[in-house]
Image: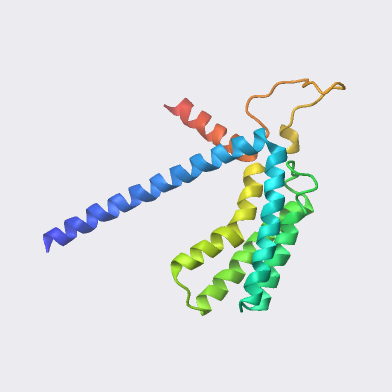
Length: 187
């Protein structure tokens, strides 16, 4: 009996350590993706365009395979809302209509698919794969690669940069830099 109790404590503690390490790995991956998207914004834009086409095509194939029309239609509408962020890509105004409507679309899409998968039994691996590609891929790619206009460097007539700013224009990179600076001053 005592061994089961000890086993429970050890496995629970190391389970939380594993979750923490997973979060650190995901944060490192997002930081690397933000660096690449900032450095190669035209390539990132092309990848986003292909990803939109892939997701829309997959929605059509899922509709033909028998998934219900309403959740797929709503999910396609959410992707159309995300598409409104592309004309100003990679810059975004946080309080603009496309930004706010994209945040609402993310929540709506999650609610719709959580409700669907709650009523229809599907193995967790399939649900995770579906969510990763069909729901999280586009918003995560947009989040990683978007920059705030106030963070961009001014450019002169010949295209040369006028000022220098610590950090970069990428939102994710700036958040990581602020956290790193905060913990650097504490230690």
